Length: 446
Image (cartoon, rainbow, N blue to C red; front, side, top):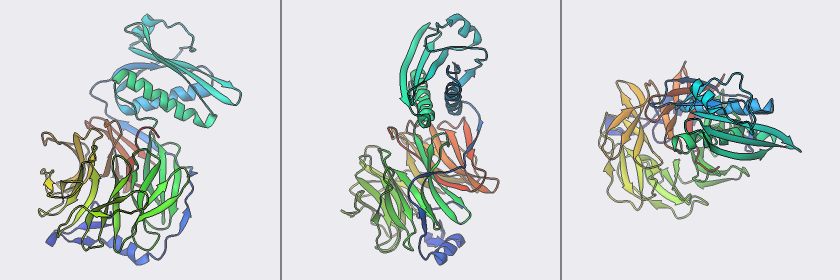
């Protein structure tokens, strides 16, 4: 059964009180003190395997030639191809036998005959101790150059440069900003150890931000991508921390009596919405994201209000509540007041997540005993079921709104999964061992 509130609890329908699950009881019994094994981001060896099924509604035929300058040039082209393939919006044309440099004249008719509407190519050269990557994109239909730029970086930055080139190709062709150079965060549980990991959007290059013997839950990116808020049990109870990624500095911003959980950032990054039980049942509060000051109560109800998330304009908060007899999604102004019900399809909806443009709402919904990810059009109320279940959790929009990251149960364990926002294309990213929980997609401009 999916989590609700603290992510260690489940709903019980009589009186709809918050009942502690068996697993949670075990956790609470063994909570003595958190053993923080490491707070400085360190690289990890486990890489994610990607399996893809389905395609987008429209696919653009594009050829990505190996960049000259092996082996770096070939690696860059392979990363670009993998990025575009994962989007489900590109049909890659075979470039076998193509030998191109950044200065090569382009045989537009030949590439059109191969089926390519677009051709990307380039050159990689080592200049001193840094690489210079020159990239070009050609439009074979209009027989004209479409894009070109030069990047420089160390050998460790070549994958990032490849993601940036893929972003440029994606945007020039689709008109939508690419997300390949962004990052994701998630919790990896291996045995009795929990790790807060940060990885590239393709799951590669994972880094450990925090390692612990006790649970880490509810990670949330700051709007500028420089910090993560999350819940840690290092003091023997759930406490909300803000973690600065560049320095590993951690500040407890919500450490009140009872439970402190479910942090969510305001769009300007100055405020956190949190769930506290300091005055009884779980209620929603806001506080200063820097030091936890200026505590304000937003909801004031005799039932459970939890899982807050700010609207993109910062003027309201969406949250989960049982005030009508089952978990459903509601909306309230940032200054409190009367809450308005948002979800009406199905008996169980929780974990609200807004699209970047504020037009669509992701929820975890229960249908026929299966927990699936649904997308609700807020203007019309129309719902689209994006996943099949049986236990899909923690949805998170990509910053361009075109993809959704979530955790799913496969083969008896939780893995990292993705689906296009129209539900047409799915992918699974899995590790050889451990369970991936509560993924969240970081913002642009990191």
